[in-house]
Each structure stands twice: as C-alpha cells, then as structure tokens.
Image 1 (cartoon, rainbow, N blue to C red):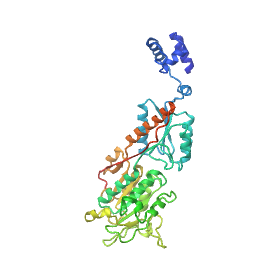
Image 2 (cartoon, one colour):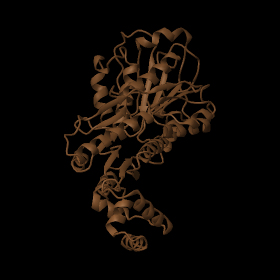
Image 3 (tube, rainbow, N blue to C red):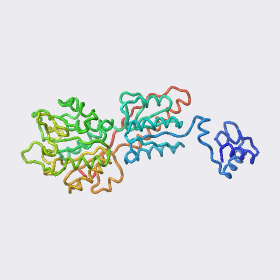
Image 4 (tube, rainbow, N blue to C red):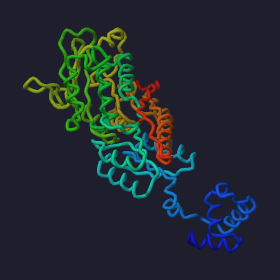
Length: 426
C-alpha cells in the first residue's frame, strides 16, 4: 500500500486531516502544537494498520535521507570489515542508516560509488579513498559533506582521520631489531596507497643508522624515489658506506596487494628451494642469484634485491641475538596487513617452517582471532573505534553547519598513534 493511501486511510479512520496525520507521523507534533491526545490516537491507528513511511518521498520533501554513504577498498579484508562495523554502529546510534560500497581498490569503482551516493541523496560520505588524486572527492564534497578515513590526500583540504602508519611501522621494526632479528622481509600491500607508503617509510627509517628521519641518511633519495613509485612494488636500496658500525641487517620489501595470495606467493618466492649461503663470517645473508640475487652485473641493485647496513639502534642486542632462521634467507617477516599475514603463515607452514621458532612474524592490524593462532601473533593495532568516532563526529559537524547555513568548521586532520600488542610469534 502506498504512503498516500496509508495517510488517507489513517485520516479517515481517526477523523483528523491528512496534514495532521503526516505531521504526527513525521515527528512534528510539538512544532505544530498538536495535542497529545490527537498524537496518541493517530499513532495507535498507524500501528494497527502497520503503516510504513515512504522514506524516499520523505527524503525528497525534507532533503534528509538519514543515510550516510560509506566506501571501503575491500569488505573481505578483516580490517575494513571491522571499520565498517564500527562506523555502522556509530551511525545507528544516531538514528542513521549506512549505505555501504566496496571499491575493490579500483578508482573507477570508487568514482561510480561516489556518484551513486550523490544520486541517492545521502546526507554525508565517509570514504577510504583509492584514487590517486582528490579531484572527484573534492567536487562531490562541495555538495555532500565528506570525511576521509584511513587514507588521505596530501594536496587536499578534505578532513581526514588516519592511523600514524609511519609510527606503527617504526614500532614494529624496532621490536624485531630489539629481539635480535637481522634478516627482515617486509611484505607490503598496494604500493601506491598512503598507508603502505608510510609503512615502508617507517620500516626503512627504523632500520637506518639514525631512525629519527630517513631524510638524514645518505640513501634517503633512493628511498623516496623507490617507495613512491607504484610501478616497482619490490623496493630495493644500495647499502651505505662500510663505515657503519654494529651488526649488519639485511632487508627486503616485496609485494603488491593487501591480499592473502600476495602474502602466500611472496613467501614461496623468497623462501624457495634455493638454499642460502650463510656462515659465521658472513656480514650479511641473502638469497643466492638463482632465487633473486642481490645485485646486477652492472653493480646496481636488481629488482627485489635487499640491502645491508648496520643500524646503531641494533647494536645493543648483538650479543644476545637469537639463532633463528639458520640457513634461511630471512629470520623475520613483517606483514603490512592481516590478510597478507594469513597468506604468509600458510606458505611458511607449507615449507615446514615454524612461526616464532624458525621465522619470527609481526603484522600490522589487529583482530581477536590472531590470539587463537598458534602461536598468537604480535601485531600493531590501529585505534579503529577512536578513528570511527572522530570521523562520524566530524561528518555530523559538517552536516549541521551546512544545514544551518553556518561557516564550516576548520577541517579536521587527525593522526592517531597505534599500539603494539606483544604475543609469541617473534
């Protein structure tokens, strides 16, 4: 039965006008000074005949759909599923519905979803952007309030709330160094995404002789040019001068997606059948040339090659370094997401390697099931609840300002510190 027929039937059965019935059922009793007796009679009749309002018609009349669009890069990723759940619950507590879209890390899919949100008259948008430029987001943001979460555009004025991915990567890498790991493989996600670039930057900064800033080291220009290039997912760097002191560290950054498959395949490539040549007198340890090599014949680093240098921060633990990973190319793996982690664990087990015993593993992102793995996984937790609360609060501040015709508040640009959860995997 249509909205119009319902309102007419309720009006006929109660003896009140259609306009009075409409005002009561749309929550405007006090505004139009309708008596409590009349409101009660109308409400009881609406309940008796199972009246369901036409929300589309209401949205067109009031320009309030009570719906927020939320777009994430992959709902199958536990991190984004949890983020969506947090935001959905926060919106529900305000009486709003969530219209969820999955861009699948594709800028074209993202653009189509953003346009669909606008056509559906959502009151606001919370977006995890995947596009390389902010033009479309800014254009839609002029008509629909928008807040970015998890990722942001450096050149945009759009408000955002993100985890400090650089700090989280530094935290995880320093933990591995403090535990005595010296051959570290980092398996990254989408190379061009903001969180990934910051995690690579933090990883390399923690390994550098002075971890305060990668720009202070002699090989910082190589870091910047390689990390920011999405066309070369395997990051390689030349080693600094031999004047560095302390135990040497071999590292490598590989990968191209926040996926289980990426984690699985990269481990099989790096821990393949080609044995390592590692000895007590070796200053570094890495795959033989048949399984990746460390340098090209011209003297420059080959694709996927590692680098060796001596961070001063690692020297204090040199006397007690564990003898893990003997004969292996790497003694620790740092995964940049839970999905990558699951693929890494599966591949290590298929090779007969024990997590925490043969190879240490640490990961970005937290999920309760990680404590039920054997061993439980040490990981960097992002403050999802806090990020969601700030994003929702910021969005509604924008919505209320625009509805009231007031100047918009200064754009929120918030970076939240992650937390290291120590377990038994490294």
